Amino acid sequence: MPKLWSETIEAHRRGVREAILDTTAALAAEYGLLSVTMSQIAEQTGIGRATLYKYFPDVESIVRAWHERQVGHHLHHLAEVRDRAREAGERLEAVLEAYALIHQRRGQHQRHHRHGAELATFVHRDEHVSQAEQQVLDMIQGLLAEASEAGDVRDDVPLEELARYCLHALAAASGLLSEAAARRLVEVVLAGLHPTVDSTDQQAAHDRDPQ
Image (cartoon, rainbow, N blue to C red; front, side, top):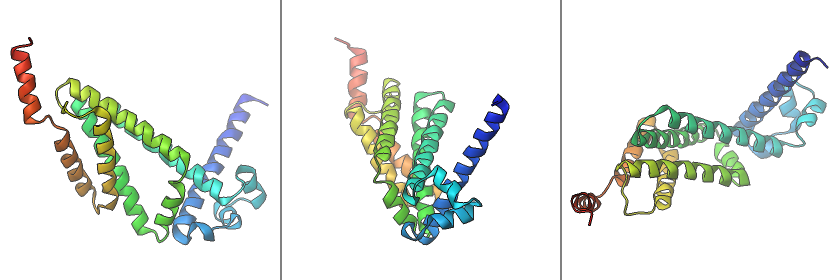
């Protein structure tokens, strides 16, 4: 098979798969996961049931694939935000803000769709969610280490604990009604990361008399 033709077929398959994922997520959020059928998905996507079954065996597998795609997009976005900033403190703040906004928009989406919470409960049981959270935790811990070396983060608490503090505190953004509120939450979290007066004085004393 010619390479161009092969690439065209592959692009078509990706397009169909993406359409299946989008359609299923929309139906599940609107009508509830248990109410969605493969026939509905096929009809709304504009393909036959036989074609749909070539891609996925059931509704649950489609929803999981959709959520894996969402998680992948979020991780990619956080990495992009991190890499756009130059200074350690700026990189940390940018990623924390992006993470908070992801939660705020997700919560807003769930509130605006009748069965959004049901869909979220289903997808967050999967193992890939824990793996994604660990990747975010590692990313934030790495940024905290950079910021700590630059003197922007307190040094009296282990970095892993600070990273977990960030993750759990910013998850509260899912209950906030605006992006402005999510950004204010980030400011509160950042305030908790700043060096304490005692640690700053100790560092200054150490710089004056390293012995």
